[in-house]
Image 1 (tube, rainbow, N blue to C red):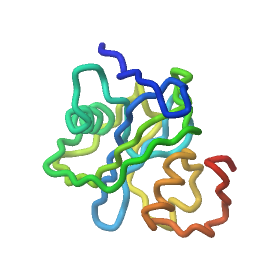
Image 2: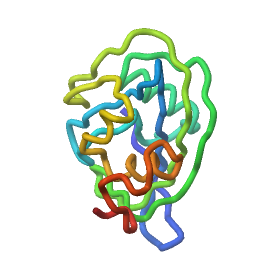
Image 3: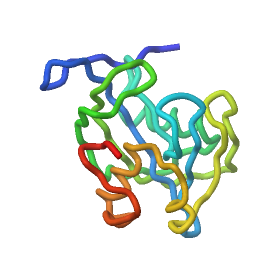
Image 4: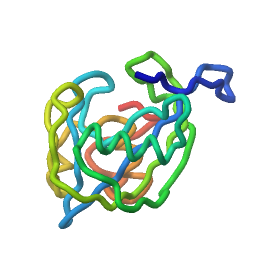
Length: 156
């Protein structure tokens, strides 16, 4: 197993690079409920490992966490966040979030996820979203900024 790329952020702290896959079918978004921190419902995502490009990592993570194969992808946003702590204790992540077209049937990775499924926007409003994904959904105008939770630098 490879290890995530470790770099130094502008604030001098250690930084990982991460990718996320926004996958939508029939008006529903594919979300997983993570088995380990950071907890909450999230899109398929993970670290960019040593020797990988972000796009290679995206394809790998989508297949590992959902069983789906990426056909096409489009970069939606990239941003360094200094408040997104991962299971390895790193607080800074440089994110690339992609919209992905996929093929195949969803299969749950029971090592990494409690559940996986397709959710409407209404259903998503009732879920405990992982902080970073609530932030991304708002930034991409997928959920409204005034949705029953307030954002202040990534903290509820």
